[in-house]
Image 1 (cartoon, one colour):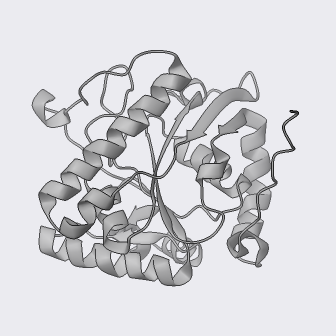
Image 2: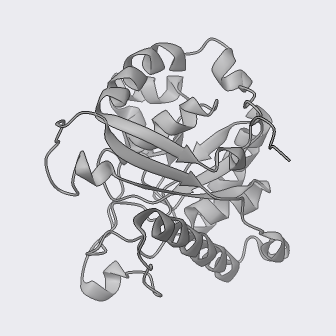
Length: 261
């Protein structure tokens, strides 16, 4: 039997309703298209509507732009978590608020849990998705595999009963190497993106506020991200995630990289 045509994705109201994303996308998407040829696998795993938490790997300064362009192409508005202090910066703060970015405060565990619940409720009410880098910053793994994750992405998904979706991408390091310099030539370097199915978090729902459960869910999502990346790179992922603390390294978050929501 000849397979039927692939169903075209339905665009969400986030993309079809006029918003500040429209002029931004009109500028950013064509520019990204000049430097990166983005190929997306697993598009069906990103919900066409409703709230979700998307958890990508992070190994290049430019990969937030790659992730944002891929999410926009699939019909959803790319919202990230961002440090609360950035919202107080003139102009930048206004832009972050206008695009619906989510502020993250450095807080104690109790305050962080309260914030996760409030953020989850807001996302659910708006039927919006959010992109959270569970590593919190660029991976410190020498071979650029995902390192140990922070609990923010899992905590947010558990607090709101939202799908937690692993994502991996590879190729952006040829455009902007980790701690390196931008390289525009040759144009349209190939960047592959794969979105995995939402994780089964049913085993964590009755203890969603327990730190141990949040850490278990975080380990689960990091393992799935590593598995997706392994498929893209054609190499086996390390059995254990790199632990910066064990190697005397620090983990510092910036825009869209604060995993401890």
